[in-house]
Length: 54
Image (cartoon, rainbow, N blue to C red; front, side):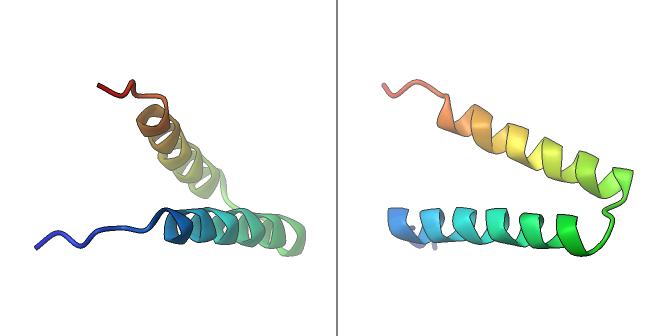
């Protein structure tokens, strides 16, 4: 069964992703494959956010 997601939970997750990416970018190199995968996932999120509301 689908569990309702709270908006603040989504914002917290997005904040965590941002901070984790910044930390990893400073402390170790990410592979090109990892960067490409992250970019694809972020592009999908942006597509969802840009969908019109009906």
